[in-house]
Image (cartoon, rainbow, N blue to C red; front, side, top):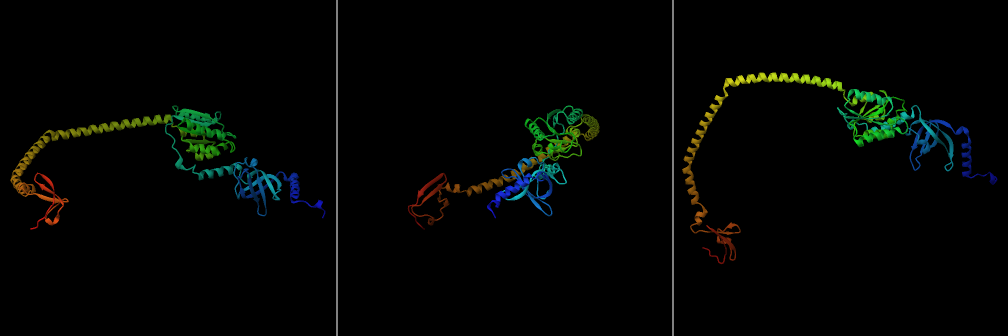
Length: 402
């Protein structure tokens, strides 16, 4: 075979790649398959995976510029439909599919993203009831985070003004759909907390499509609501619409108008309730006063009948007799035992060591012990001699035994 017909491996791969890249039929293909061996990240932020069906498989790559537009994160065993172009990886000699777009097969990308984020945040405890804060009963300031021009803000203002006109309404207008909406909503919630500008927050918007409501499914909004020290009422869309914001919020309202009703009490109902309680309290007090007057009259009759003054006089007399009896008994007891006490004192005095010592006797002490025998000391020992009026320290010079 002539050398000009022999190709290097690189040349062959390059030729095959050029053939694949130049085939218009292979530059915009749609493929359905199941994801396996999914890998994300790396230095370039690219996705790598294998698409397979029951008979075959193909390696794929989705570069960062394409995967950054996805609303969901691909996972192993997920069925998807991808759009891309067929090419060849020259260095490895492997043909692959370069993915430009991807959609879940059988469910929308937004639905998949919603379920993924919901599962992720639930695992982190953002939906736990133990983190839910109570809505204040009588808020002085109500913060509203919504569009400044939509019907939702008008409904909220109307309901708050009608139900509880004493509450101050503070509105922070934000975009509620579009790429910047999630960031603006999260920033507004944080601003209310930094300034401590409200006692309760209403966060939401009117109804719309899933795409219109998507800002309230974004992670920044979820964490802003979770970290808010001010209680948050979520009011996104209609009653059948549910967003991540609803699950994280301290209270979910089906509509913005309903959120306003939940945020403040009804002043008319409060007035009626206060009036009713006032009447009940007045009637209760009248009953207690009447009951007290009857009991007072009864007690007065009993006191008059039993004449407390005489009872007290009798008690005084009994106390005087008892006191006199006790005093006489004590006097007799002391007289009877006085002579006994004198006799005991004389006997104790006769036995007193001090009395004996006053006759010229002394007590020898060595090492805090009384010397009872000459065998307890030796020449040269120091002993203390205790006499009736003091102590003497002496040295033993000589010992005589009887």
